[in-house]
Length: 328
Image (tube, rainbow, N blue to C red; front, side, top):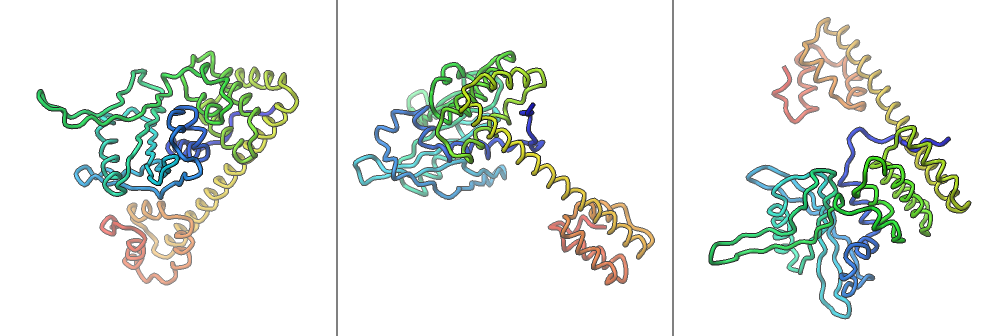
């Protein structure tokens, strides 16, 4: 039986996953959640702009905007921007920060901006705000409104009939009970199999769903038993996609394991050579050497014979870091 719990990194880059999904299926994303925008959006004019990075000089916070799209108003020669932000954690106050991103983009591009936020965190289960307000008793200075797509307030059942790749993926992050997890994963893949997508896009959806809906062995048995009941063409698409995705995960795991093994061997060799050369190394130097990359460790092994004393080793280590003062 094919296992559907695939190899994934310990720390999931949620923003990257959402950015890849929405960028790949941007028109379908708008069609699913903002169909009114399609009435004036010229689809053929869509252009993804280079990433924008903002730094708050007061807090030192660095932020990279998720998705910025430039598009033309249908039938007109004028353009506007669509700003899409994914929020994987319930950070507050979001509206104020989002307004800052909006204002900087507005100043830089001098185009109307349609702001959209996807709240993709699982908790808390509270209705998030859709505006940022600055007002006085006698004056409303700013009312910045933005469209909110809050996944933990949307029921997956309302999207299961949408023949849309974004629905197929995002159902995995919508409101569901613990007992419904295996059913939701089944419906995600069942819907995916009805879409006429190339293997790369199918694997993107499969990877997204598997990241957020990992099943235990008992749930996997139920999931695979339901897949077996599908029409042959659907079953073939799903099994082929799962097999390819699992193979990619295993290959990535093997590559990471091999890389880590080589790095451990290089570290052991470097420390042994240095201790033979200098008899004794400080604990600080050993710790610093342990943080070197595989390439740096290989260079260190070659450079050992050129060091006349520990001071030259310390100078070499200082050149590998932005904080030479940390080397003692």
